[in-house]
Image (cartoon, rainbow, N blue to C red):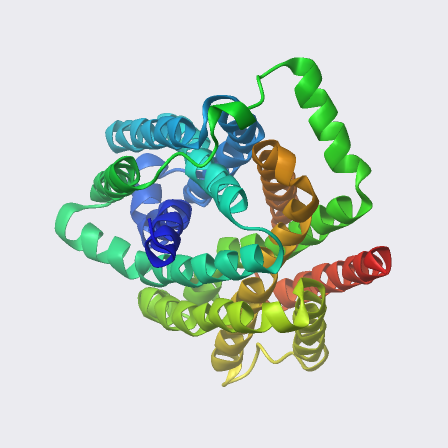
Length: 392
């Protein structure tokens, strides 16, 4: 498999996660009306339960792939993903829907985590960061069009048709992988799943100061992204009265922000992962501080300022998440599967908890979102300062 095909396949695997989240956004009002008419505010739980399942699955996907090989775990994850999607299609109340989404999230952890281990099996250092950045660039195209695709599916097949699309999407990359991708972890390099070995691997990961700080910084950056994703549709709808336009604005913003990963792929080899991440977080601090200080989200032009701010958040994610993941993985090549699991699980679960708590505390207003992101960006910047001192 050539490099271009490899990148495209890995991007498709990881995009199954974004598709399962963003395609659901336009379906939330219909799902609330049908499955939770008495309490429509519970409908966004279909997003958080998916993230929870993905975070939990992330803990085991990597170690299993270290023991059994990468392709088997990706296949098992795709199977669970499809089972969850089919279960959600049959759900007649919100509770079985949430259970099915939890299962789907567990399955999504397989391709999400193991694909990063597959990259680490073949690349290292800045070359790995470059590959991850290109994958992220392609990955962004799926959430860009996912809300529009979800709205189109709803128009022709109802909201349940989205879950059929999930199964089709998964089947495409599974067939492609089985036919074209060689196993990247030979039997001689596999690690048996023993409790002592897993405990030692986890201890090794957290003994490394740079890895710990990189995981913390990634958690804070992902918290900003999760928080924005959770609140952006209600802000468009109730805050600015533009709910019907949401899929189109979201698409345009995501496409623009997708160029961040391409830019990062070009610059990271020259300037390094740490410097680019610090710069992105510093710019985000300045922008969010201006929005908080001058209340730029209000007034007649508030919506357009909010669109600019949202674009900056997504752009910043493209300049940071791939770099932070590569930083954390760099010293852990000999236990790449376990490292990918621990790094992904801790950052995902941590970000889901932080964003959930912040949402419960601050509500859904644009101004409070600006303030929360400012605090998280400042914390991330301080963490990256410590990372740079550690490297020195």
